[in-house]
Length: 335
Image 1 (cartoon, rainbow, N blue to C red):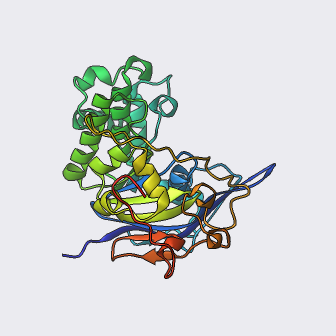
Image 2 (tube, rainbow, N blue to C red):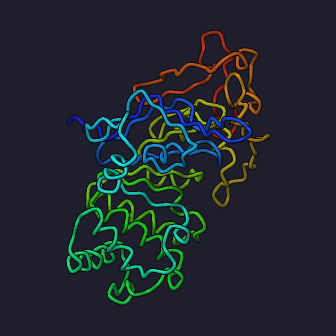
Image 3 (tube, one colour):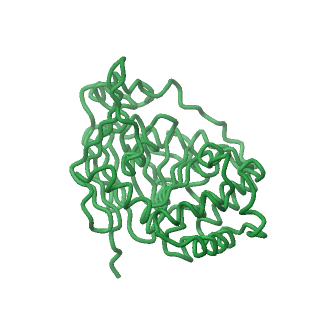
């Protein structure tokens, strides 16, 4: 049975024009999401993960310049759509869960009022219908005693409860896509697991697709069927989760996996990725990872490597894939 394509982005570029120069935050990425699919985007801070999705939602400041060859969502061409057109669509069909609910929720409004406002703006509901839908949403995201909770202000809720409220607001309009930007950051491990279980459960209940943005590979492994690895504003590797975790091919992906703490009883040392992410005002002329790559070659400085297809589902940008390049393989912790 064929899977229907929900979102398709070709050659997305985002540049911030600031007083010291142009920050090339997203550099020609292409990606897709199918209906009912969970896709993870992983990488260090500053790799372009969040900016790429904020570009899709048109939630960037005026000094950001966004361009793409094509952006299709549910078959609708958004490539040249206005900010207002995209925001109207995104409010109804795309939900977003931001990293820090305390900065996303209005501290002067009760939880219930904020959720009702979302419904009345995007779904044109009456006050009574919106109030009933809020109670339904709070139950759906496992918040007990919704009648009492919706009368509370954000500071009266725990971090996990606030994130549940944000998820409830994101799914209020029954969107076909939810973008979750670091939804478990600053939560303890137990609450992280609960939030991830909630997102997975909602995928089954309402059939939504999820894009999960995180720097935590453990979160990706437990949630996503496919993974995009970003570095320096580029997608450097893409594949099914099992391909990324058990057969990674890019040196940056190797570095991310080596830096993940092992289970108790496993004594492999943590190996950091030396150096710092690139300056995106003056990015390296070639592969963005070249200055930090232990396997860098002279050709890596000459230009961006092409995207090489390893299989139908696995591709990457790396000169190590070229014919005649040194044979370097991942050995489950060493490369």
